Length: 441
Image (cartoon, rainbow, N blue to C red):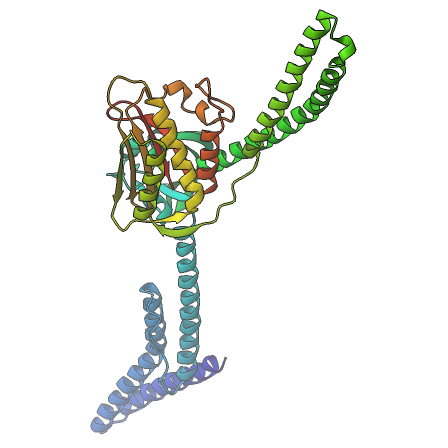
């Protein structure tokens, strides 16, 4: 480039100047009577040598400044302004390189901010474990999901489950489903882990994805499909039975056959068969409601007045059973389908009232609504006999009931409605005995 040619010409000129000055010194020393000339010649030599050193060192200084700026990431350094000897071209080239580096740094920083925001906002919780075993939440989902963790060690996460603490401490499994206590309930989560390199250090990345809601939705869809198929096939088979039984009953009702007592018995049996087949048809039609997924119409509404209305409805059905209603805070708001959610709670309250019927101690029933962090919690608590632990999942199955007069539909529909809201419903022992139904939305 131009800098090379001009720098070389300048270097040759300064070397020539040094040579001429040295020649003048030699001439002054061999010629007698030139004492002053000798001093001047020596000064010229010194000046020429300094000029040569200055000419060469300017490049070293510029390059050294450039390297120092790179070392400390100082992209604001400028190298232009020097004139003569082609150094304006060198300064311009270094400034251009620094400008390109600054643009690349800005692009890299923008890309890094994008990736950080992407990781921070992704819906799957991400934990990182360094070589010393320190565990750190790496995004919002992790900080929200593991907000109760009180340390950075793997064992500090044992409050959610010993299996999670073991996984964070180390393990060979790359993917597995664990059962953890998260957000006030036991639920399944999908845990994946992998090893990454970061700045020469090995970092384990562990993702924790709650899948209980997805599993509940899949289970409810499977149950719905099963009920739809069963009711369809049973009704298809029952319809001709009902028709033939009614026809046979009409034929056996012929007055000419009344003289035979065996025909009378047959007519009574066929009439009973026709009546039971007809009743069974109505029974199955009623169950077909289970096969329809609830259509959720969400809206925001005040929890207090809505709960008080539920209390009045329940009081009309059970005037002798007091219901304690607690809404916290008083201005609590709910985002849900008010009609379907009311159907769920009326069903739970009615079941609780039936469970406490005939017991010796005075029945108590409570309905509580409150916010727990970002979750709406609805609790129905009674002091009845409770639900045995072995049946706490079965009671939500369609057609399952422990009462002689029960239909086995109510709790299944309640679960369908809650799951359709994206929530969950579970049963536990009430503190004072009895059952505690807990809904999380």
